[in-house]
Length: 240
Image (cartoon, rainbow, N blue to C red; front, top):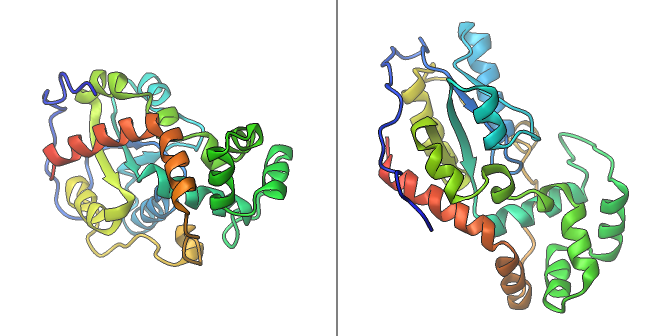
């Protein structure tokens, strides 16, 4: 994993009083990493203060595209353990995004869910090298597009180090939201949605994975884990 240049200086940051936001960051919306809750926090900030200190892009925009579209903006995003994200994404699309949304399945998703009723069933099929398992992974929205799809890989991240303004993690979402509010001068009393509907979180615990399924899916997610490791190292060097 290349980390050359990852210690380079970032853009100058302007302090601001709480609730008087002055900085702007463009955030990717990587599915199943907390983007809906982050969008809810932004909405609360705008309603309370009239200020829009960051922007959240649509699900389809990648880091390379965001960097090109907003050449002078800082870039931010949240990451999540790739296997946890895949399981969450499978379950979310299996219930069609409910209860917050009700987005119909694509034809490929319909075929995938008719064959595999759980992430474990899909992972065990992948371990058996079933071609239908690869087709299902490619058909389901949140399993098809992982961290490597959105963030490109360690080499691109190396090049964009001076542009990176914030990397959060779903596993430490509340702590990172508090850090983001301090960094951007957001109104400290504002909160991101926490309920399953407002935050678009699964209303039930994730189904367990057998060891064969876990091993097969983890191996398939190797490019995503390389990106996750890069971002985790960046976060360790930028705790504030």
